[in-house]
Length: 117
Image (cartoon, rainbow, N blue to C red):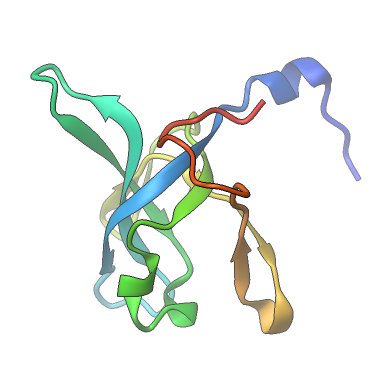
């Protein structure tokens, strides 16, 4: 195991995001493109969603079960293009039974964008 310093760890911005929209990334078996609410607003005061691509498609054939689910994300990763879609963060999950991702969630509903501390 490689250790990171506390100062390095503090650089990670981990927040609760609420999944608002999901679509399959065409011509892939694993990728979903999700629009996530982190409580951010645009210049006009409208809710701004952040796009994040996650490799969980094979476990969620009915993507509607993901809508309004609150999940933890790392939000300060550099944007990355994945199969033509820009991803602006990373979903946090652990490997469950048979490899199915288990989302890290809060015990109760919290505000979108709540920071992990």
